Structure formats: C-alpha cells, structure tokens
Amino acid sequence: MLGQRPHRVHDPAGHGPSARPIYHAPMHAALAPTPTRRTSVGDHLRHWRQLRRLSQLDLAADAELSTRHLSCVETGKASPSRELVLRLCERLAVPLRERNAWLVAAGYAPMYREHAMDDPSMLAARRAVQHILDSHEPWPAVAFDRHWNMVLANRMVAPLLAGVAPELLQGPVNLLRISLHPDGLAPRIANLNQWREHLFGRLRQQIHQTGDEGLADLLTELMAYPAQPANATQRLDGEHPGVLMPFLFETPGGTLHLISTTTVFGSPVDITLQELALETFFPGDEATADALRAMAAGHAG
Image (cartoon, rainbow, N blue to C red; front, side, top):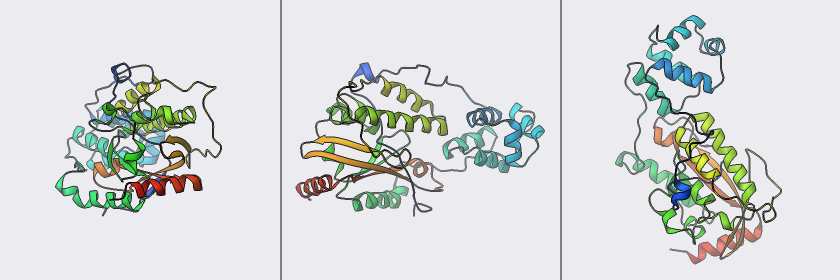
C-alpha cells in the first residue's frame, strides 16, 4: 500500500511555527544558502551536481554519457530527453519534488504526484500510517513531513507535550521547534546540549541531501534558542550516531529514558509519502517501560 518495505534510519524529533517573535524571526546567517532562482534544466543540473560535489567528468561517467553532452545540457546548448533528465536525477539522488521541477524546466510534464495526507485519495495510506503508529503503543510514535511538522501521532504523544506553550501547539506542530524552544520541551531534557548537537547534525545532513533553503532557515532559527549551561547538562553514554541516541526527559510521571529511530518509506511514487517519516520511541530501561505502561493505562480510551 505504501510501496516497498520501510527502512530505518536514525533521526530525532522535528520543527514548525514558533511562539516567541524573538525566536521565530528568520535569521539569514551564513548557514542559510543564498536563494537562487533556477529556471532552466541546466540551472537545476549545475546546482545539484555542485551540491553533490561531482565534476562534470564524474557525473557523465556515472550517467553513461559524454562529458561534452553533459556540458551542453548544463549550458543550455542541448535539450535533454525525458529519459536523460530522469537518469541524471537518479544519479544525483534528487528528491521527487525536485525531479518534477527538472521535468517542467526541460519542457516535460511532471511525473510524480503529490497529495496532502487528508486528501481522499490518501485515505488508505493515512490509515496504514496511523495503524503503524497505534501498533507501537504503549511507546510514543509520530509521523512528520519534510519540514518536520507533525502529521499523525499515537495517543502516547499528547501526554509528553503537557506543559508546552499553547502557541507552539497551534497550526502545524513542528517537532524540532517544540523540542528545542525554551517554552517547549527543552527545559525538561536533561541532556539538552547533547540532544541539540544530534538534531543540528541531522538537520545539516538533510539540508545537504535536499538543498531545502527553508530547512537552512530553520536551522539558523533553532541555533538561536538558548542552550543549557555547560555545568547543568548531562552527557549520556550509549550514543551511536546514525543508529540510536539517548534522550532523558522529565515528565510528571517520572524521568523517561527514551531511544528514537526514524522510518522512511522506500521508493514511493507520491511526493508526500517519500517525504513522510515515522519517529518511534522505545524505552531505554525498565523504569521507563513501566512509566509508559502506566501512562497508557491512565489515558486508556
């Protein structure tokens, strides 16, 4: 129903609109790339080739065409076929959303559809995703979009958000923002600085992979949020970059030691599904498992 079997990659919580103007105001620092209007397929090709740090020679060899022809496409002296556009996108690992932009720029119709998760045509997919999240109970699980805005969640997520400023929970709830905002979950994260480093590293990787300037702006905003004083933070053992990250979180029900993993769906043909990610939390110890079970029992029904 959702394409090939999901595969797991580690990825922390998310982001979205802010409560305090002082933090929400866009901050275009050096981390944010200069916006560039790409109108031709050559512009797109040059941008993504440079983003992937490939020479024309390397890309031409990988895409099985001559360097001269690739150069002519990049400079606008030659018009690529639809097959070549898709082949170059494949070699450069261009996201589906951007592949449509390439096709339009080259004079072809978009190939990949995009529907909101609440669109009637996405009902089966939405039900399947919700079923996955619900099946993860009594552990928390959430689905979020490419900008880390929460799309779906199981009933174990709401209790963890108790105490978050109401402004942060209005509109699209951005998981990264509520994680690091001083009026969000940040004051309750014992290893906040360690968690921040992890989130920033993950977000930088996503920016590099997608070239999304909105995410670059978000990273700049998040970095403006106050960090924990060095003498007040903890650094937990058991961190394995790309595999798992410990997360120590204070709740009314006690301290929770959580570990998160993120699942993405392989080879979907819908842009929305390609950009959807599921973050599932697991207890890091028995005390946390017991606390989550008790929390689930208290929110039964």
